[in-house]
Image (cartoon, rainbow over all chains, first blue to last red; front, side, top):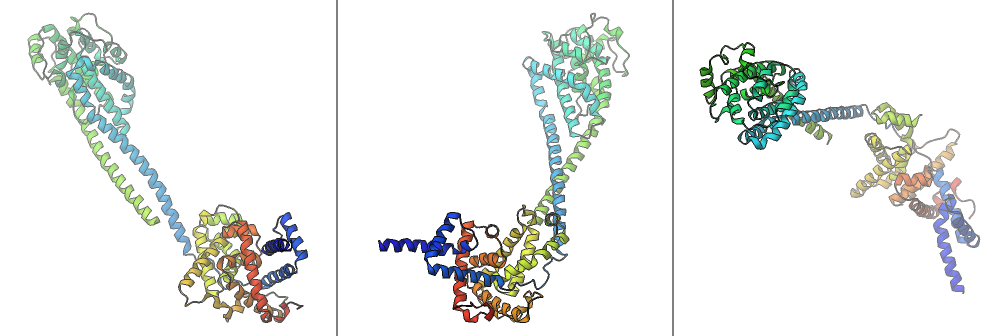
Length: 374
Length: 197
């Protein structure tokens, strides 16, 4: 019993000793405080310890305070360090933004460039296997029809922007597709289209006319081919005079249409492609014409002397029979389009160089800023 | 002094605003450094280092007690110096007590008699020797509590430890200091000796 009391007291004594400091500072909970006070009443050693602790604390608090022997204010030289840091941070932010913008522009540009380069291969496939590619071409033509007015507006003023390039490329692809599409058209439809090529609002009708499949595709292809070397290449000469005449008609109309559209939309292709130029007008003609025979007479006067339409049938046959008749429309396409294409090519080169330099500059800047920070 | 405003300006790089804060806190910072390090030169070094670090790290200050934030930097600078001193025992940090210039930095109150002031100076030397015998973590807690008069919560914020740890460290520090002073009662100035016994 006595042992147990002593051990209990020892436990309480240790608790009291450990908590006297907090007891002085009134940092004990009510129960702990009561427990310490209960022990203090019974333990003289703890009472003495408490008094000694209080005295010690009082002594320490009476120790004189020291004051700073000098001013610890930071010198002015500290300021530029921060100012410089902030300047770097500002430069950093600008460089970051510029890098993002430049990267986006480059991305758009390269995407457009890629599409332009690769965009030709599906067209080539469509030429070799027209029936398979027909639905795709139809879609493309429809898109051309929808987008053309916008492109006409955008192409010239926004020539420096990569976005414009995209449009132009899209236009080019679709125009080529349209050529393929036109190659599948019926002869009676094709001349009609050519007839109306000079009319302004022709897109809607083209949409209606183009998708129609036609069994007599080869003939039309020949006739149409007079304007574009691509479609004509490898095609047999036309057997009938009438179809040749029609083809000539189409050539004339197409040439005029090319002239008009090329001036309006400024089809800025990097490489001259007469076929495309021919295709664009052919794919955008209006209402059907009932009588094909009237066409020669109703033709408007053509500016080019080489295009003497149906007046000389033999010549026409001979001209149409040539495997690569690049004469009229091809001449038109080159004459009208090439300067613009060249200009566009220069713009592309300049833009590419500028963007590349800009990226290098930004990379160096960011790297330098990063090093500076470290 | 509008402290939050000064801090905000200083955070934007305004050196004058920061120096206003320095003027306000430098005595307290130096006092803590001096008591923890026990040496005038080391205390000056630690205080200056602390203010430079505080200026550079000001953007990391996220509200709360600026005093506690600043004192944490001060005590960390003190620990750095203590570690350096431990590696180079040739510069004993506890020799401050014999520092001849010690009285130059002591604060004097106008209404204090010269005798009292001398007594207090002696007391200060003795207490400083007692503090120097404590381990650094107990030293810091004792200085912050019994010299700076800071509450437990603020000490916990400065030292980044739990409240219970502050309590136990302070208890042990006070017990050791009591023992130290009891053993040297005859060295205490006459006015500070226990009246009875």
